[in-house]
Length: 293
Image (cartoon, rainbow, N blue to C red; front, side, top):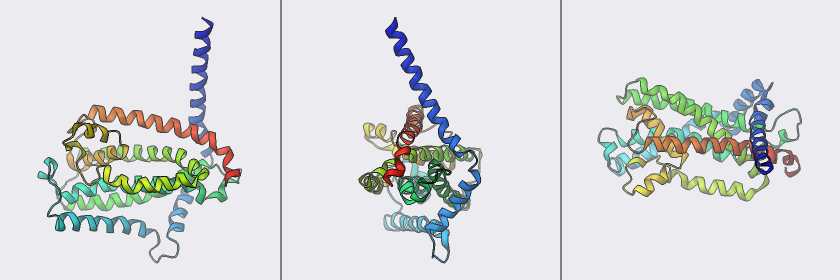
């Protein structure tokens, strides 16, 4: 009986600790809303300082990449790989829609993982919360995402994909994507600040993730069923497919070509894990950051 009470008490203590950790970051942000938005804008300006068109290079780079993919797959490969989805959707449109969330996710992981190290001048300022660094870094990437999405949406309308009710899902997908990768930086940024090797590891895997995240291929129609299930574990694939459901597939998030119920359940578990582990890692490492940097 005493053992059961002890175990129950430990569980309650653990969940109370997690709940307190989840509230810690919002509490740190209190009173810094204006500064965070200003720093997000300044981060864009600082990144492209000295360039004539400044932050617009952030849009020009992915647009140029899209042009290269269009030329390679539409001209060079005569329409790209064939499959059920390409019967009615041009391959470039298919790849472009998957490329939209990829740009944001890639920038969040690549830049977000080293944002604390790059902004070490804020770490020793007691009046400025370290967690705000990850917030304004992620927010600055989201500004670019909104601009890119606007350009892509106009292109889709010109290509014959008329606005419809399914498109409203983009608000949900974009919002959840922002929170997911913002929370991910709570773990990545402190760990990268402690280890340059970890930062190099992140840069290495990001170069290959593009080709295994369903950006340029249809993960729902992979012939190997085991690999189909493995693809459901990749959150980047989830958002690429989610954007396609909202913009070109005309499907709701609970519909799909392959196990949408399992796909949503796996992502929900991953979302909770990233959120909980993010705050735990951040609260565990943040006090040691001034000494490391």
